[in-house]
Structures are given as C-alpha cells and as structure tokens.
Length: 161
Length: 383
Image (cartoon, rainbow over all chains, first blue to last red; front, side, top):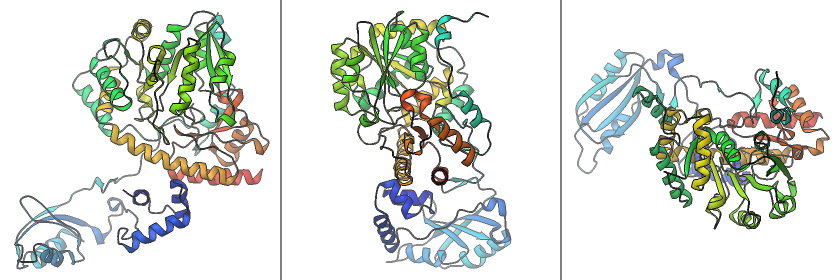
C-alpha cells in the first residue's frame, strides 16, 4: 500500500510537511500525491472518529444491522437494489454479502421505533426485497480498528537505558 | 558490612541523580526510554494467559523448553541462514542481560581483557569487572559513525585479550554495520584469536540494509556467542526472555552457570516466546515501518533545528551532537528537562566518548515526538 495512504489512514491530520519528512520526500511531491489521491477518489474525505458511546446524543441513539434478502434483477444484478437502499440517509453502511442473505445494511436512528419504521415502511415494501432480519446493536466495543475507550496511559518508566 | 572488592571497583552511575529527577517529574515528554512504546502484540499476550489457564506453571528444562529452542533454531535458519542445533547450541536466557552475563562468566579468567566500545550500553563493562576481567574501552569517533574499525581492535589487542563485545544495531548511537564492515572486523578477530560476544538484540530493527549476524560470516560461528531476544522486536521487555547461541562447549559452560543461578526462564515467558516466533512477524513488520517513519522525521527535524545528527541505521535511537550549544551533555539534558519537560539521556551515561551528545529515543508516539521537537527547538532558541 502507498505509504502516504497508510499514514493518513492512521492520522488524517499529518501535514504534507510532516509526511515529507517521514518518507524522505519533498513537501511538494507529497502535496501532489495527496492531490492525485483526492482527485482519483482514493481519498474520499477526512473526518474525526467520534466515540458515540460517550456522547449518546439523540440523533444517533440506535443502530441496527439488517440482513436483507433480495431478488437480483436481470442485467442489473444487485447494484440497482443496493443503490435504492443505500441512498437513504438512515443507512450508514451497506455491503453485498456471501452466504444466506444478500445485503447487510447498517441503519442508524433516534430510537428503536425510528429504525423499525424504516424497516417496515421503506425497506420491506421494496419490490425486490424478499425478507429482512433486524439485529439491534447493544454496545460497541471496537469499530474499524479503533477501540472505543480512552487509550490507556503508558506504563513505561519515563527513562531507562 | 564488608562489600566485595570486585563490586567496589564498579563506579557508581554518574547520572542516577538525573534519572531520579526525571522519574519524579510529572507530565514529562520522554525521549529517554530504551524500550518500545508498543505493548506486546495481543496474540502473544493471549497465548501466555491461556498457558496459565492450562496450568503451565512449572520449572522447565534448564536450557528452555525444547519447542522454543526448535522455534529459535528454525527462525534463525529461515531469516539468516544460521544453523544452530536446538539440543546443544541454544540456551534460553532471562533477556540478553543474562545471556551476556553468562557469556562473560563462561570465558573470562581473572586478569583477562575484554574489548568494549565507548560509548556503549551500560552493562557490558561492569559485568566484565565483576568476573575479575578488565574491560578495555575502544573510543569510537563520530567521523566513523561511532563504529569500531579493525584498526581500533588491532591497536588495543595484547596477549591478555580474550574477547570483544559488539552491539549492533547499537544502543545508544543507532548505528549498525554492513556485511562488508563486519567482514573487516572478522579478519582481525580471527587473526587475534578472539571470542566475539555479539549482542544483536536490535537486529529486527535494521532499516537500510539486511542485518548480518556475526556468526553467519565464514569461520565466525565457532568463535561467536550470538545474543538475541524478544524485548525490542516483539515489544516484550518486561517478559525478560532472550537466548544465546554458540559452540556447544560454550553453551554447555553457560548452561552450567545458568542452572545454578537462574534454573530456567519463567515458563510463561517461554510460552509467549514460542507464539512470538510462530505468529509474530506481521506485527514486527508493522512496528518496524512505523519506527522507520519516525526515524526519518526525527532526523530531519533535528538537523533542521540545528542539532546535527547522522541517520542511524537501526534500533530506535538518534544520537545528535549538542556541541554547538557549548553545554555539557548533562547540563543540556537537565536544563531541557527543567525548562521544557522533555527527557533525553545525556551521552555521558554511555561513557566519556558520549560527551557532547544526547540519546533521543523515537520509541514514542508521533504526536509526542512532534511536540518534543518543537520544545527542543524553542529551548535552543532561548539559549
């Protein structure tokens, strides 16, 4: 993997100057590479990772994983139905899966009620959706490589030979 | 109470006071640490916990469990083409510290001389003294990258010289030796009939070329005690586990001392070490890539703020010169600590040749490193 990507994936705030020093490149070369990655859509955006387990605000009260079985459409396969689903803003992630169901859809809502409504009123009635199974998430421990709690303090003594 | 003459000969550490100062201060950004900032990879920790649950709590064979010695042998063979017999040529030790102690005790008689570089890691010379030997320091020059040259060895060798200690990649300078440089040293070692005690604990952290174990050089296996361990590459310092490989008569002699003084390495650490060798390579590579980027960053920043520093080839240390500030190493380190709360180690902790230098450890998270460099820059400007 491109090392610039590796660095930014861990720390989106690393500046081109810092990355240049880390990789022994010139700042302008790093800037150009980043621009190209952005232009090509490899880097989509930069955002902070928020631990919603702590703030628990009303906007993001409940999350559910929904297994969706669908009938693929001629010529369009799963793409068409997937897009119909993921365009809803309530859907935070959407994956095509192997196994006993087809799409895994992650939905976020204010309450269990909001999420159930979404499933009942938006998702299930779609003509190609054959069935859904909803799992509510009770607690998140780790997400995309980040453990959702304060990093532990270093236990090393501050000086040693 | 009476203290033995040999022990009395060991000079007290000149920087103990400075260490106490650092340890007593809160919110210090520490660039003074000689161990990784990563914790041991989870698969290794998990394996150790499981071994306790299974009831592995006994003594082991003095030399270490055979499964571990086999894994060490297999690992050294796959990685460096070394050929050590797990039955007779490998001993599992309590870190390289014990391995080194055993090596020196096994080969040193009263009055024997052992060559050590200056600056150097702190424990080499005192152990030689405790064994009744005489540590002969070879002063190395910044112009040579603080490396020992074949000429340095020839110059100090006499009839009493038994062995030489080499540590590469080096603590504190971060330097290492290329295969070509080592071959030059091997020629003198053979000519003078020396034993090489080679501490290669940082070998997994070599950045610019492939590490060459001294014992892999032609004719050197039979005169080398190869010391290595798990502390640095696998972030396992607190587990206290390493190993010594060498000719079977030397390993037998070292084992004799080890069985009376240590008996064996804690079994939990041995279990963890097996896992490290079997499944640890991925974590090591990840940590190494991270260290390399920090190295580039730190060296570039140090030179930018006016502390000239060569690029170290391994370990996680930079050894910049502070001569242009006009301060001694200890003054520089103490004032930096008091004014900016950044801890570094004065070069003199590693011997008189370290005067005018400080050791900076980049085994610290990137954000901290960045902040520390800004503080050192501000400190220099205010001088």
